[in-house]
Image (cartoon, rainbow, N blue to C red):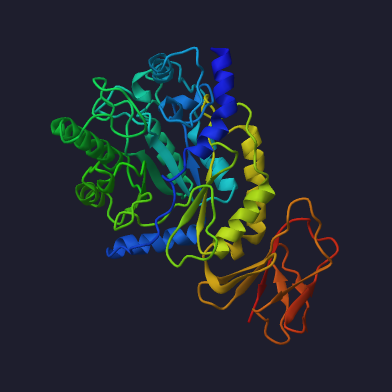
Length: 455
């Protein structure tokens, strides 16, 4: 078993990357919602810029890729000393070992607030079907296994409450496929791939049961846990276009009845229920003129793994700069430990990101993109009233700041100076041909930085 854990831990990154494939490509077009409450909430969400996406479930116990290792697809590597059924039984049985006795959602919220994050998305159920809330419709929930006697066993309630207390916009991730449910993966048929494993037309009653099960669980999340701002639905292969119709119009009607103005994100499914797009692990090549969010993990993995390869704070900051200049948001994946905490290695990196945002956040939060958004290492945003332009210099990792920087376009008004957001220092500007040139202070921190100018 130890060898199995090691093998899966080593292949977790590969699984995560390969799992995306054709499933998580963003839609090619966008359809604006017509509900004014939804539009208003979308605009507010766009102002926030930076959020966190937390994957936490039975997969956190051994620290392996979430859900995907129980799928029979060619790209997945598993221990060959076990049959598929033996492995699946072991995986589902992790529910009896998932006992996060140090579970502290207040610590999570505090860490993410210090990081400068403004909204959160919590995984209520991943594809493996394990619920991180006390669902009435299944026994496969954290509230009915090893953690059942803990006063915080209804995890979702405590997570949402903790983040609301910090002023976060709250979101709930929900997997449309459910590989534990007999209404989706029925034991009468073999399991091959990620899709429903029985012919829907032949077993229409069973599929209707799955539709109702999915509806019921979404209704639980949206009706029992207070205000929810975002319903972030994953598993884009479960859709009408793929012959797996779960009646999204009915779900949407219920969802907006329970949560007026709810942002719905039916990932990769173009139309009225994909209120913003979610390119995964990527940044679009150019600006997009509609709401979007790059979802990128802090390490190589979404959930906790024992030996992560972390991104540096500088890498995350530069990623955020590019995304915001292109008109998007960044949701950063951070996985709590099996015990229920955000580990020190993550908190250290997140704190540094937050320190940068404390100094330079005026160029990030509540900004709008500009038509010219980049010139080399210089990126641009604007204040919402268009009175200020923010010039953000992106320092590449392992390089030093130059003595001066320059850019074309966004020329300051004659006689005005550039103001460093970090310390308020005024810097003189001069024109050299079609370039604006600014000499940098000698003791400026070796990091990306932002300035404010008036054009």
